[in-house]
Image (tube, rainbow, N blue to C red; front, side, top):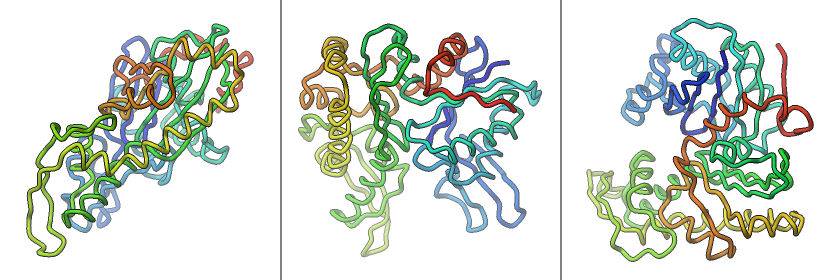
Length: 335
C-alpha cells in the first residue's frame, strides 16, 4: 500500500494507491485538557475553532510547514491514515511532502510521526518538486521550470531541471500570515476584532492584489474593540490589498532573488515556459498578473493548485527509482 501525504500547515491531503486523493481535511486537533484526550481531528475540529470552552483546546500542531506539537501531530497522522485505510494498518510505504527549508531535526520529527502511524518506509520529497510534478510538468527533461508554491505556512520557490533543484528559496510568508495581517489591519483601522476564519473568507472573497477597484467586497462580523459589542462591517478589495500587499511583495522579492543564482540558460527556459503557481495562495485574485508584471515572465495558475503537492506525492511512487538515483532532494529512511 502506497500512501502520499501533503503535510500542510493548513490542510492535510492523503493519496492512496491509484485512488487519488482520498482525504482533504484541516490540520487541526481538538484536545480536552480535563480528560487528557483528543476529541476531534480535521474538519470536525475545524468547526470548533474559536467556539470552545476553556478546557477544550483547538490547536494546529503544524506551524510554518513543520511540526510544532509532536504528540498532536502523531495522533492526527495516525487518525487520518486509519480513516482512509479502514483502521487496517498494512505497513504502507509513505511519501511525505515537506518544505524545502526543513532542517534535519524537523525531518526526523516528520519521519517519527509517520513511523508511529505504522509506516514501513518513509520517503521525504520537497514540496516544490511535488507541486511541479502534480502540475503535470516533466521534471526529468533538461529544461528549466519554475514553481512558486504558496501554502498555508510557507512559500516554496524552486527552479528544477533534470530531476534536480537548481535554485530554491523558502520563506515563512503564506496563507496563515496573510490571514493574520487582515485581522491586524481591520483591528487597527476599524477597531473591530475578527477571527482568522473570517479573515480567510475575506481573503478568498474580496482580495485583488493586482488592480483593486472597490467592486469586490464582503460583510464581516466581529467585536468592536472599544464598545465591546457585536459589529458588522463591509470591507472591499482596497482593504484586503492594504492589509496583505507587504507580504505579497516579500514573496515577489524572494522570487526575484531565486533568479540571481540561476544559470542564464535556465532563465531563458523559464521566460519561455513561464512560472507555475500552486498552493492555496495561487487562488488569490490577481497574484498571477502581479507576478507577470513585476518579473516580466508569464505566470500560469496550475489546474487545481491546492492539490498539486498531493498529486505530486502520488506520482512520486512511479519514479522513486529515478528520484533516488542522483536526486539529492529526496531522502529515503528505512525503519
